[in-house]
Image 1 (tube, rainbow, N blue to C red):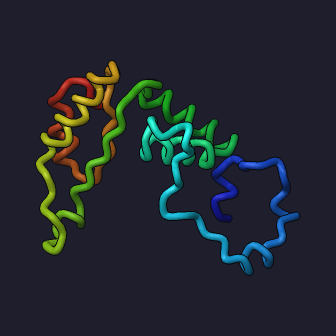
Image 2 (cartoon, one colour; image 1 turned 90 degrees about the horizontal axis):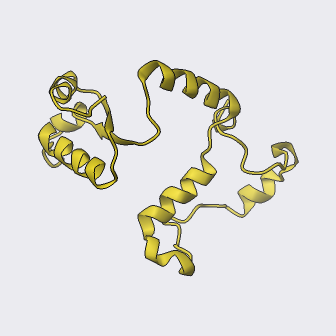
Length: 141
């Protein structure tokens, strides 16, 4: 099925008319970093990359409908900080740097929320202990 099922098309050109052999022959690859256009350098690399991905990775109409339903069910607000804390198998790998305590993630997320005047922090995690700790702090959903 591929991403075409989940993402809105970035063009009104039909995929069926693309010359896939020509595209593969040219070995089309995205650059590892999208260069910031000169008139936008004040915004910075992170802003530019996030904006480009936002433009390219829009959900399809079907997925948008499902997302609206899920957001309504969980009480999603438009202005919210998202925080992903991964403490599963990555923390067990001794070759990696040690995982930080949850409170350090929470403190940073709360700082960002204050800075941008957001009332809620949406937590995504694979660790039930992180969920329990977050539930004791205001603003986490």
